Image (cartoon, rainbow, N blue to C red):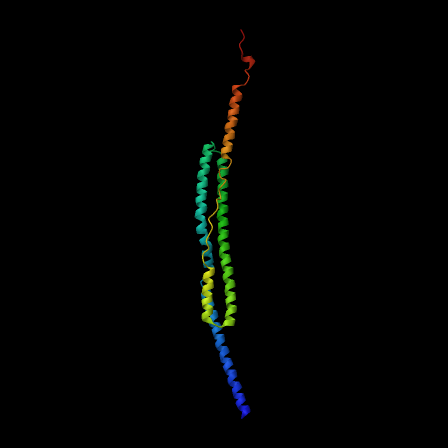
Length: 203
């Protein structure tokens, strides 16, 4: 009888542990589902939008700087008497190249911000899945997922775009001054040039 009773108690304990493990596995499954649901909206479109968000911030600043630099350049060219000619073409092409380079750099920075967010969220999700397996608390893991996602998906505070076209008119005033000096030297040389003796009429 004792053996029989002992066997029955062991069976009951086994069934109890089995039920607990099944319940734990159920909670782990529910926790994983909660994690997957929390991250479900963070797809390729989200990261594309995150990159585009930076471009929406940076591009108007780049365009404003470009337009101002072009205006300042043309004023400086006009003052130096070079509004028409190769100097204008060369400098405007240089400004356009800087503009295109700035847009490319801004696009790369936006993509870098998006990639960093993607990497951070992937790490968070991996860590949460590990915690879920040990905690087996779907409500707690869901709250942790929401909190950590929120903390890592805030739009960062962007720094203003630095002056890309700072040297757009560099050298133009100096060049104009040099040309004026050369012209003055030429005129002075002509004024004080010796008179050609052959032109003197002798009596």
